[in-house]
Image 1 (cartoon, rainbow, N blue to C red):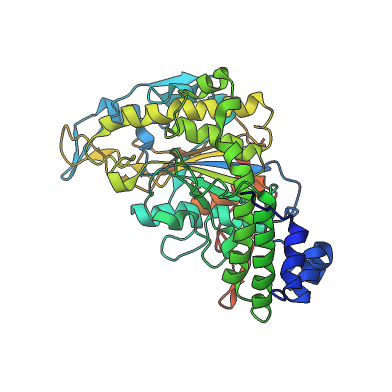
Image 2: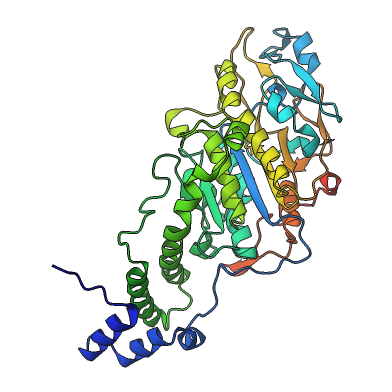
Length: 463
């Protein structure tokens, strides 16, 4: 038996003839341009918007290592700790030296530990901050602090602020996407939009065979599905009349359009068959692998390449205790670092080869560092340490091969040029052409911003 597949106009006219839809719906769907002009809310919340001033960065790839990476074992060498390892500091603490050697890399000669030889190989593209200071020493508070600027209250994530401020280059993909195999500390709050319109919330991708649920269309006919969505759009917009202030409703309407676009664009993003063997080798990605951090980095580049404004790649899964939170076994760092070292360096090299590093800001950070002391000689781990730690940036107008700020000889406190999370956020926004003091949203009777009432652009990091 043959199956009739009416085209869009035939289907609408047949419904109209049978009295199943109103003339208003018929005219709207047959004259989309006119309908758009008369729409209750014709503005597209994800349409690209101009920045406050010329931007160095078109996009951000934000690498977040969940669990608190030890600065004194990675990017901040402390010979004093090594010399006095296991010696008593006071009644309650002993000095704990690093288990790894530090070596100078590149023309800059910046020292990096043996945990990250591949990142060391691109150190001349990196501006290293050795004086970061978070606003909270708890995983939850510190994680939302580096993401939202607040350690105590729900606030929008930095990716949501960027989406709200700049929109998206690609209307078939969200402006803010997050690749996270498991949940970091603070869970989905890391990519939440809070009081910003829901459309700016991060879209989570879970590495694996199906990164996004229902990614493939349920029907082969895109035209038929488009017709169905147009009908749904009409009724939704009728419902929106008189409820224009309901951002959840407006975002829900937009979500159908975004989902339809993603079914067209996303499968191609995750299809790595067009990547050369040399590129896979650069990231250390084995063919068929869809779960490693190497896969995350390569897909992150492909998303950035296709117009996603803010891509966050999260390493670590707190639900299975597989992250950088090493209270007892610093030896876990050997595998943790191996998982990310080559892919991160490969990402920077790949972006540079493609000419994308000039306008892509790569950010590497964690919620805090690890303390330089142990409670007993021979202790295998380190405790939380928010007083000072390391982060770094690369690309998009950043002065590579530089170090800003320093900790004291123990790695215990900031010695000079402290950089708060608000300073760090202000600098990221600045490279995107955003004045962090002007990017505001009125909520509950006051204007809010990512950096609250704090923050300065760390211009010493800029080329």
